[in-house]
Amino acid sequence: MTGIIAVIMTFSIPIIAILTVHTQKLAKIKHNMTKDEITLEKLKQENFLLETEKMKLELEQMKLESPKDLTKII
Image 1 (cartoon, one colour):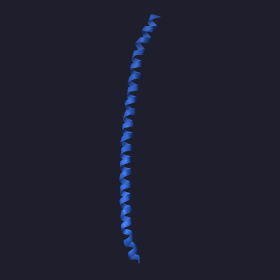
Image 2 (cartoon, helix red, strand yellow; image 1 turned 30 degrees about the horizontal axis):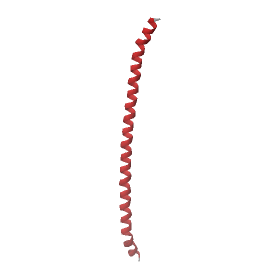
Image 3 (tube, one colour; image 1 turned 135 degrees about the vertical axis):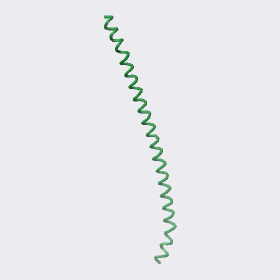
Image 4 (tube, one colour; image 1 turned 180 degrees about the vertical axis):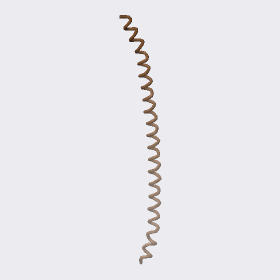
């Protein structure tokens, strides 16, 4: 009986260590994925703001050119 307990204790410690290391690696991978997703969202937001500003400028330019086009037609 004590032999079985010794064998179980001998093998359970390395198995627990392997599972712990695996869990830690998964946590690091999730952490890196979350950091990458945050970076991507920041880039998307910056891109959205730039595109919005560009569209505002284009709209302003169209408004400024519009009276010129009307005078040419008349």
